[in-house]
Figure 1 (cartoon, rainbow, N blue to C red):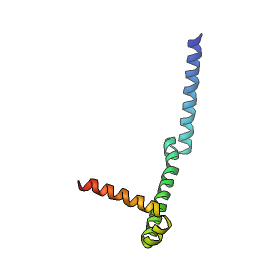
Figure 2: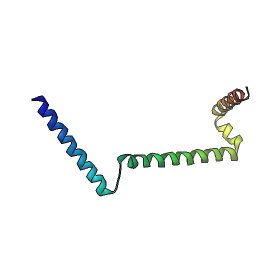
Figure 3: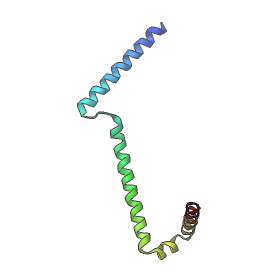
Figure 4: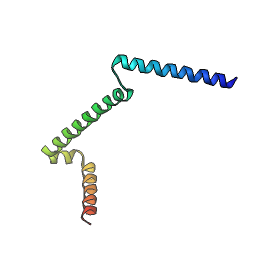
Length: 89
């Protein structure tokens, strides 16, 4: 009895997979991964642009940047110093 239920469930899953594949072919998509990764790539690109803008703004007027964020500036300098020290050794 359980074996027939299992076989019926497997057959139902196979039909669902076939329907999904047919839908993907009809819409021109070959995999769901491509559609899901595109927004993440766009978000990452936007984050990189934002980071570049922040670095550019900091480089234009470093005194203003340090005055507005003294703790972050000191911690950043400390971390950079430690990294440079490890590379030199």
